[in-house]
Amino acid sequence: MEYPNSHLAIFIIRENRFIARCRLMSGEEVIVHVKNTGRGKEVLVAGALVTLQYWNSPKRKTNYDLIAVKKGDQWINIDSQVPNRLAYESLLDGTILLPQITGNLTLLKREVTYHRSKFDFYFETDVGEKGFIEIKGMTLENKRVGAFPDAPTSRGLKHVSELIDAKKEGYYAAVLFVVQFEDIDVATIHRAMQPELAKKIGQAIADGIQVFAYNCLVDETSISINKAVPFDLTAAFEDPNL
Image: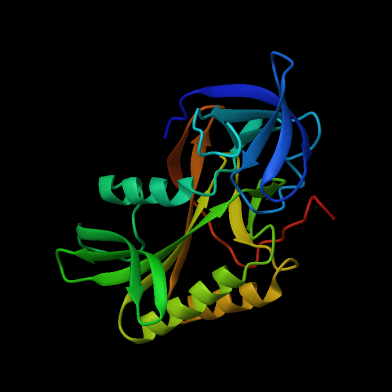
């Protein structure tokens, strides 16, 4: 995915979950929309190099979206809308492979309601396999360990519980973490942030739900799926914000 009309800027301050102030390289200070409601404390720091995407629309409250932040030597994409789009395209073209699925996808639908649940994707294959996939973006990293979430998520907990129910009814069920940066050795759950989610993921794995991760190639103006990376629920993670 390419981001047209992109501009480098210097991050100044995050005023609330949705709004930040940045300074363009021209020196102009602008108000920007933060495309991620996570905390992002370790990356959204004063002086950080960021990428803004410009929109010329009278319907918008701001003309810029904050889409990526440079942390050390690598770019981290923080666009919370991009993981689903990347996953959809990469599942269709075979860049992302579903663990233990033997057939070829014949159907991939977005935002599918199942009982009282709504999952990101529903799929079918040419050998009769059917199932649901939930996509979660991962932007938190420390010492080459990626962790989810960076803020408590009741929605994420609910989705895992609903996948467990779907699995019991005979469907394939999976959680895919799209790691929105490249430099990672292992992905895990941030147990200290949300121990109940870690417990629920452990239950899901024991019940046969596939939990896996793919990292991304990211620069200041683009992001693309790269390759599968290990997911390990027991991996140690040190929160850089503590």
